[in-house]
Length: 453
Image (tube, rainbow, N blue to C red):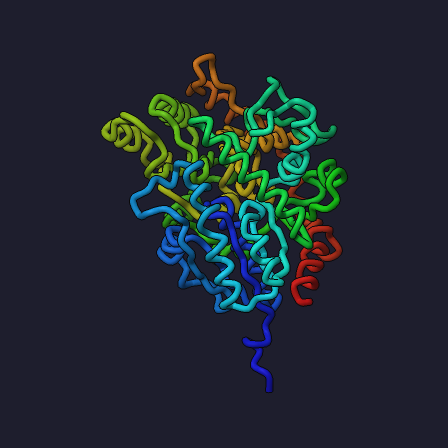
């Protein structure tokens, strides 16, 4: 009798090495395993180490974690994004090619942002399915970059030539030339490296991928899917309805916050999380803390160890935590999907990363938007202007969001019944797309059929 483990179709899954990319690709991997696939999940060595430390052992038998070098030495700064992507470009494709030879897979399910590896896969006769972990609007805009250069919005190195924003189509959020996915703070060379990587990866997806998927759903981005029919939504992605399977968290989760939420009144808690990259200066950090105190509401605030730079006094923050003890909870990382699904949460103060956006939508949570960089500004526009399921903070002339601004906007978001109703309608639309006969379900089934060929 044939062994089912050897008979299971085997795919290589390759995310870009960052939290916002690992999570949706891990969620997709769980779904593939549920459909009988064997997954080799490939990450760079530092990410691999973090995955093993935070729950890699709890992954199902169908997902095997494998690592490749990222081209940087142990002590190098991986927050220097231009240097990081330059090293990835030079190093990872060769190792992925070697891994493909060893594993003898027929399919690479790769993050569009790792498109530099698609050519190597195709040369070995391996077919490519590309996954974009952000919005269809963002990917579609990247497809349009050659046209935007021709129209004078950018030069051929990706630098903005025009101020203001541009709109690809009605119903899609406008994009600002200085807030593109390659817009990296720092020297001009970094911008060039980022632009080259994004351009090559996007082109590689168009040239080599037989199917291009994104973590979205048709009703969320109707205009984008109409304009870019080659992009197929399979979201909102999640690993399992019970939220028990590990989704590739890179930091240890404080699950005690779930018990704390259990003790809070229905729709009372302000939840704040700004993703894995956002960094606040000490002045803004203090205003944010004081604004939370000013609301008088219970709050759950995710503060990573590297969340702020400079001279924030630990004694000041300890004193703040003492003052709000019992009312507010500060954690270094949390199981966000379980938090957002909790009935005690009243609103989500978010950087508007696309994963967080989809998780908030899926759980019918109103947003207070506080975007930080690249596509987060367009995601804010979806939330505030197109879906109208949240509001945005407004910084003062000095760029700082004051405690009064935060406190008053929290009250407005939580008290707005129109926002709550529109959030319910959008949540129901997401569920319908994921259900039997829904477009996301049908697109996922199409992927499964393709990967079995």
